[in-house]
Image 1 (cartoon, rainbow, N blue to C red):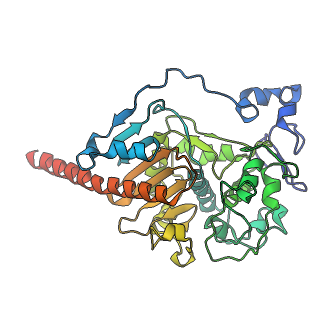
Image 2 (cartoon, rainbow, N blue to C red; image 1 turned 30 degrees about the horizontal axis):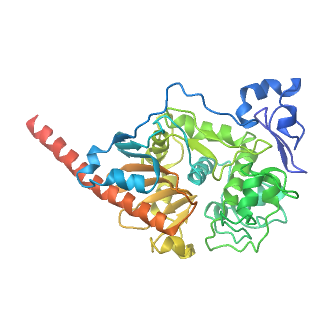
Length: 410
């Protein structure tokens, strides 16, 4: 095993996240002790909540640079306000052609990505599959024997990636008794209740269900199982692998961040925070066939499979197919199956990384919807993003005409 700060008690399934810590030991009780302080003093944000001390004041007014789109969408700023946008950015080729930040939110502020985080995890898994470290045909328990007897005993890694496992998991974000809220408590997002599993790995091992495969069922827990597999095959913490295999390669302007549970397990399914510009760079990499300034992230075949879409017959979720009848889900990405070939990473409360291959554009919308998930808000945001794509058709055509004119004059 590599990576000196990750030790796993495979019998109990408790990861110990810094040198010398006993598996399952509470970080909060130990971080000031001599054995642990050197690690903890450099990683305190993983143990104690921290607040940002800004290097410059937050802007009082919105930052608006939408000129390239407003000719065809004069109401764009009002529509962004209508979807509670905190940040909006359009990256066409390597050019930022439109950008918006609400008052009090700056271009270099990180925003919670919610389930857009899942798509980032899928890319890391893809890189490890490309390298032969993970075989998607293998059963999940080949890598995580701790999950024997759980719903994950039998299905393959590919079925996990495509969310085609039947599991007793209620993803109702407003139901305090739903599994998704128990998941949040295990991940450190809500206060623990008596009898709750200790940390993420205990929670994942507790999930049950028929385990039948072949039909889509959205389940946030699947992504954290993928992160656990990543840790097992690399011997390193998920945040480190996310950095090495994705973030360090896209020429990001800023560090990303990820929330962790009380054992230090990264909340891969929804806990990543990043700036709009840096998230757009992830989209740029996918559109570029997996290539990035710092080196290849995934193979061209992996990105082509994302853009081509998954098994349409498996997609039975009416909340998605009502808007995109030919839609599918693959490798932790939503595939619209429309004429434009749009693909998206989606998170609750209005997070979106929307790819438009036709105009070679990555569109980022980071929002704060009042409720986590609402059909009418999804419909409004999808309509907005498609309208942006159609406005981009004119922008791209105008650029091509300018290039042709320049060439003829030369």
